[in-house]
Image (tube, rainbow, N blue to C red; front, side):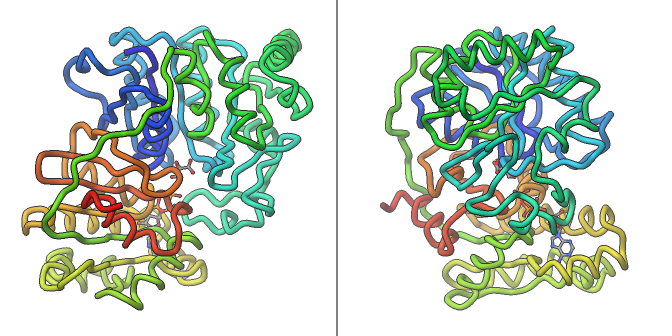
Length: 412
Ligand SMILES: Nc1ncnc2c1ncn2[C@@H]1O[C@H](COP(=O)(O)OP(=O)(O)OP(=O)(O)O)[C@@H](O)[C@H]1O
Ligand SMILES: O=C(O)[C@@H](O)C(=O)CO
């Protein structure tokens, strides 16, 4: 294994694996830290953790353990993948994990670049945009776990890290890899260890990737990986896929603007059942009941707890943010176990935390990466009779669930 990656959630890890696979690398996504060694043909390994919203100390501990495993596989470079909307709080976990990895690897010139132009995330003068909106005006200010209220990534990162935060501006990035490398050197000389790098277009990420050749640690969204396969002699190639027949279902715990539109679109055309969060939290609705309902449907049924920001805020105020999330995630994990036991072979999930709970609940060990469904979301094979798509909250076209099911079946 040459490139070792640590993802802070499961959908984000599949997003990264997708980018590397499209770039021609042979990639495997691991659910947590594997017990044994990687297969010898793996060029890039993505260890998917669920560390985005857990206590800082635990996130650091798990990330360092993943680093140990990746180093034992012979990795030459480490990539820490977080969300393209930089999901974190003033405590972390992006800063503390980046610090810990940088210190363990003795890495300087640590690039911080959440840009993902394919889904509208760009960084200009240190500020993160989602399409034509600043981060704090795009809906992310209402995120249930990591409300993003400041678009200046340098300012948002500063309280999270022990190190000084630097910046390489767009003017240097546009001038190509040599100028980027020189700007990183200058930032390092000025005592900045974590360096936010502007990127507006895929071409910028290709240039940043070339400048990052040989650096021990890179951090960012999946976009930062666009330029990396070339550093390892890989070239873009079609990703093979064996379609999966059988029965399908969709589970959504994401409350993002994009997911809520996808849920509304799907519910108008297919069997759909809302999971009222409070009924689950108060024990009035069980996972068994929801799974039985799904299994009794024809077509592509959807069960969702996705709700608008006001409803999410009401539930969190009444029951506590962490308790609400934990209870719902445990419920989704149990529904997924019952669905697979009941014969579901194609499972589509929406939301990073929700997908993480499902993948862990199903104890999916390794995921083979298939073709891209929509930007940032690949088809994944979890076993001989199970394929999945793990959609990040904000990703996907409005008809994503139908599209994902078609791709998982191997249809164009
Ligand atoms: N109706 C609801 N009320 C309160 N919390 C909810 C509700 N529905 C879901 N949640 C919780 O909100 C969180 C949503 O996070 P999740 O990561 O799954 O989606 P997301 O943030 O949109 O996706 P991503 O992390 O990929 O951007 C989960 O912990 C989920 O359990
Ligand atoms: O980077 C992104 O936006 C996604 O891969 C993700 O991590 C959302 O959970």
